[in-house]
Image (cartoon, rainbow, N blue to C red; front, top):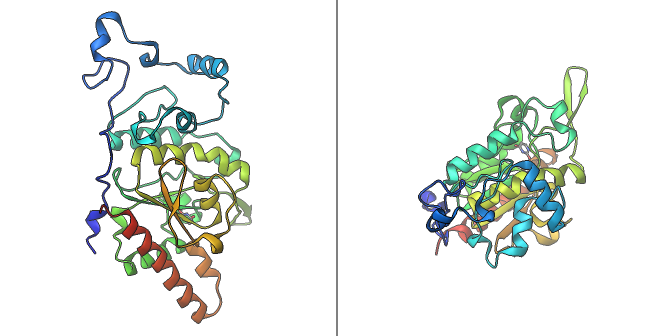
Length: 288
Ligand code: URA
């Protein structure tokens, strides 16, 4: 399998540079003599709050949610605005900016008990995005997703599926390690609905920038975040699910599920099923 072909060549529009009206690529360039239209002015957080109030937009909704109602095709929509209402047409730079903002995230209380935000990593034009639950202990310490025991399972499964990890964008539904200190240990705790929903802001922005052809939700937390509702893994796994915003998702188990199985035979069977789901997702993501 040609792994490098997991790059997304299907972006309908190259993303536009949109930082005020000062940049050459701005679509409002021609109107500069008369000044930029209101929609193009740099928006301060106070202006944004006022706009949300006037337009009845909930204060905690992400720009992606807002846009979904406005854009016929989300790929035609402009790239996200972050805290300072910047629009950036360079996906790599946009991801870097987003990661920088996420490093100071206090959208839910989980930051208080974690070492750092663990943001997604991988190519900004990846055709395949994997979404896990939340960082574990080792991810929290290193600042990288899926580097602990579950990450080792994921690496083996990706390799068996013929997918190069470096060709895939890997992230989590929740970006801080939720844990309960117990003596010297930190016990993993499942994120609750409000934490998943608060953190979806970052995932939605990652999705809007990377525009993967297929998103793989690893486990129930990721599935909830990607699908915006509770879904059962077994009834939905291993098939292509069309999402309302022209995205496609594949749901499968979380790699840590395999670590909890006791019997080798069960582990082998579930590993093969995970590999099959990943291979199916990669095939669907590859440009035809
Ligand atoms: N489990 C996850 O869901 N994500 C990680 O990054 C590590 C373990």
